[in-house]
Image 1: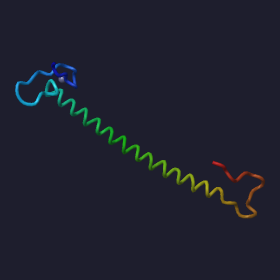
Image 2: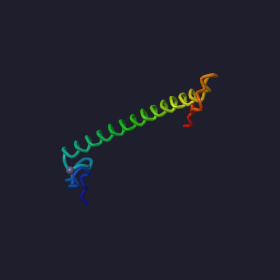
Image 3: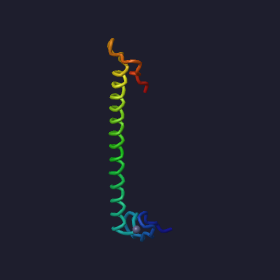
Length: 90
Ligand SMILES: [Zn+2]
């Protein structure tokens, strides 16, 4: 049964010696390696982006909590406003 090239689905020529070829040609082997390298780079970039996004979210939450805590502090007497809502519920 002939091997099928994973790159172009073509038939891989049988070798008489050595390890059986995976790809039908050098071009297909190189294309597959380039695709694999691109995929690896994309995965690494996605992981970095996700880590960065997680850090951003942590930072934003910290800022949000600080802001909420600051707004929750009662205003000094005499500056409490006139029935205006100074406390926000987030
Ligand atoms: Zn091929």
